Image (cartoon, rainbow, N blue to C red):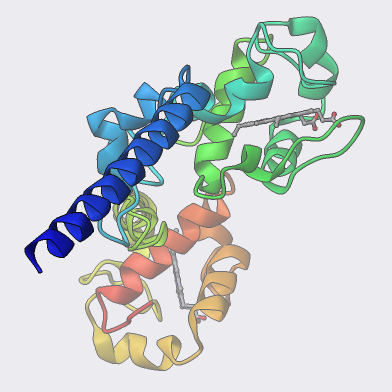
Length: 264
Ligand code: HEC
Ligand code: HEC
């Protein structure tokens, strides 16, 4: 009985030993085949790792900049440089600082270039939409275009970075804030002459007099803005200042109306 067990035991040990040798050989073979492969160190930088473990709704680049707030240089250095770098050689991609390659493109104007960069452009070569990075906002692409072209003979103004322009809250919040500040400034400079709370100007709805504004508010924002831009009865077009932009007039309308029971 004992002897049989011993024989069985040693057979098992031989079998397991053989298996081990086989496994070790396999392991070494695999190791041999893959030597020379290292994981990309820059992919494992703490900041890059943080990017991947951000909670949803707050996307940031590897450097921690919230989406929407990335500067032209950051976008260029990460995305566009792959094809537009000064020393790159991608068919037909105009290279940064090579003014001769850019001049005809710059002549198209900033808006066209930005539209092409956002939507993609296949004139002679293949420019992918947003350089292939769909997380880039329109403004971020525009900043990258300005950054790139301004080093290549262009002179464009990049859209300013609005801090707190988090992707989740949408771009409209900061735009609304600056519009509100603008609206107040325009009002205080111009509209106040006839729309001040204590103005004696006939028929003009006075700011904070909700009763005077209620029937006008009922017309809706678009109509109010249109009347303020084009003039309305004794209300002069653009409050009398022809140089005021549509956006400024609109901001003033919104400011005034919202102080007077409106929610524009
Ligand atoms: C995969 C390569 C590639 C990447 C990445 C890339 N581009 Fe391009 N880009 C091109 C090529 C190729 C062209 C030329 C297309 C043509 O003329 O047909 C081009 C052209 C352009 C133009 C000129 C368009 C015009 O109307 O002449 C702009 C502006 C531009 N790219 C901006 C950007 C920006 C901004 C980024 C980064 C966000 C970017 N590109 C990333 C390949 C790329
Ligand atoms: C010279 C005086 C005057 C100035 C300056 C003026 N307004 Fe008026 N505004 C009026 C009068 C008067 C009315 C009322 C017109 C009516 O309903 O008969 C009016 C009406 C309005 C209305 C309501 C229009 C509607 O459809 O009922 C808006 C909106 C408005 N003004 C915006 C502005 C803004 C914005 C400015 C400054 C950029 C401005 N106004 C500057 C005199 C003025």
